[in-house]
Length: 164
Length: 214
Image 1 (tube, each protein chain N blue to C red):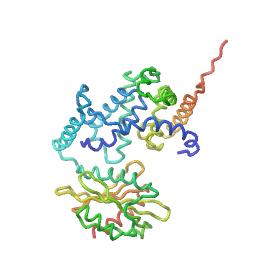
Image 2: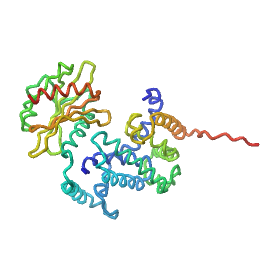
Image 3: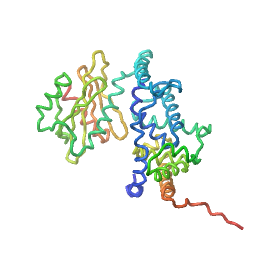
Image 4: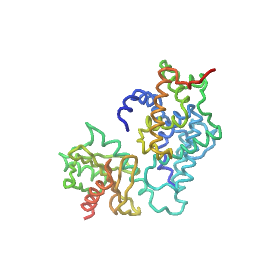
């Protein structure tokens, strides 16, 4: 195992994790668990796309954490936590973006963020998340659209219900 | 990728990057370098980091010999990353232009402390643009850049082989969109990278190989 190979990717993993999880400690825990797992599983990696491999590990850890409810999905983080992170004047926009992100379904959030932050192709995302390319495309377009609506303050489309 | 879709959401993508890119340059918590207790004072991170790296270096030695040397595993990754950084450069793709090829070769040979040769790849349609000096894992690296008529670029990453380093035959790796052919002979580590398909790159790589190993 050569941990040094992984080190250059830590900043990218942290950036993605922060956007994915929302809060700093939760995100760094996700990164830490990912790194530990990558170290344990390093013998399974074949020289190839190390970035995709690391992100696929992070995806698995993230899914497990969601199941274990270590991270609560799609729950709004409280205002104080966010305010503490972004004390800048233009925090209105940033607040909106972060709040909007946590409101996205985790599986949409993953795809949107991998494409936006890592500039991944559909094929890369498909590899990292272990889902078909068609699914990547539909999650991306739905996720982006929903995020745009949330950021622009348009009410998210709600399900129509027949009321008697 | 659908261009139209990407354009439609360009602002959103930019906003996401603007918000989270600063994290890339945040100092990495010491605990991430190795498993360490969470109570470690971040002010002591630098010291812990140094110890972490030392342990990180020592640990592989305790393990049974891997199939490939560390250098061989790292070579394509480093070469691909260098390719990704410099090949999109419009104004400064190289430090020394091919016009000054004599100077380029002399300079890089001197810095790497090994006589370098620059392969001629015209028969595969690639002309030398020039080269630059890069920092490697434990010393300087030379990067030569080539370009074809369509603007497609290839880079050749060359670094001296360390004493006792295991030699590696011709191998292929893929990092993101970058394909890499690499090999290690008793003089140098070589890696040829490009965002081209494997067959095209293989042709050029075998030409490089032939010229350098003859």
